[in-house]
Image (cartoon, rainbow, N blue to C red; front, side, top):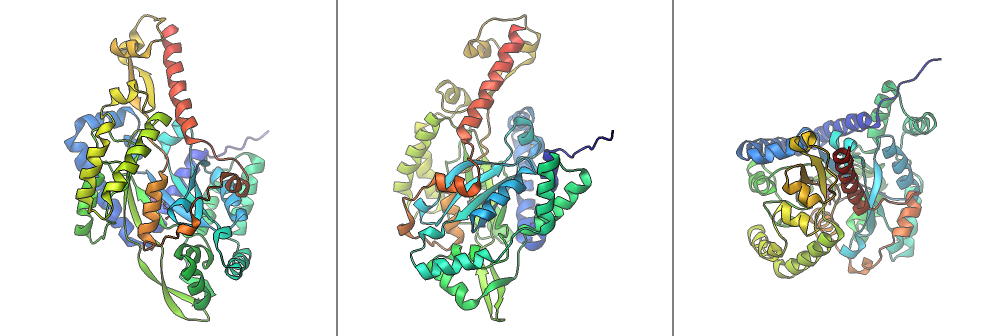
Length: 453
Ligand code: OOG
Ligand code: NI
């Protein structure tokens, strides 16, 4: 009997994310410049902060830092979204979280496809923020129908990609050769096309309703609209962006700078105006693609997240129209209400932690104590914050808006509909907080089991 060896889904994802990064560098040279800038700032930060270096290494985060990035796409129909779910599963990426962007005046709702297990995240945490256009929010019946007709005519997947996805599902994996073919075929879905599938007039009509609708409906596929490397010092990258010819958005989204970073901070450079050939040969332009960077911190518990949301709201009331420096100063004051030490965050149950035995703990005689605080005080156990792997709806809205030219339509608000999203997806989305809680719990149990043994 012959055994087929399948390539691990972690490796398929790693190959795909590298191929995607190479493609986007060729498509948008500024992304290559951004990668260089981030790499340089990360090196400098690690050199200046040996303690950060040690911690990232101990957490297994240093190795993934240089490959770590997220991308974003937008699709137009349930069929496209559910096929994407099957495509991402080939790479060990699953839908996590539901994000309602209608609240921010953007007619989409979204999830993030990402790896879930500790070892998969450590290997390559590639994530894709994926939005589904909500045609039901378009008021004009004729425009809605026109958009539906256009979308019904396209297939964003190559026939070979479809075959390989089916083969993965039947076989339970892909051989290394099949995986390489899959990467090549899957990449086609995310490629940029200079020619629109519609004439300029149709594009204009959809664009007038919302630029995002034109972006989703008028092209052959859901071009990747940004790829985001992870930096260790977002303030420094933001400061240096103009020196390498980039125009950063006005403010860094999310929490302010802290000694112990939380959740996610993000900034981007503005979308590029690119020339497009429309059906009937008319020339025009479209802005869709941009660059973004992110800095990740610890994942918050529901209690921590509620406090974050409350402070963010308070901050936002005071920061409208401020430049980044003034904005950060206000946020810094407001966020003083959240303790800025790992220990306090852990003791107060505000963030999730990963528990592991120290060297002393590994050598210790068995202990029947299950009191984590006591074990930590004795130096037998160490707790390290779990990195936030997801996104933030208010920040995402800010990113959408900065590259959609501020386009916002209040009429879309108040339309969260997770059930409809899951129906289109063909599966439930996983609750991100439950995942962090499980990982924390599992690490505690491993520690206690080892100590009891
Ligand atoms: C997605 C914007 C959201 C993020 O990092 O929060 C996003 C989009 O513009 O399609 O990527
Ligand atoms: Ni993004």
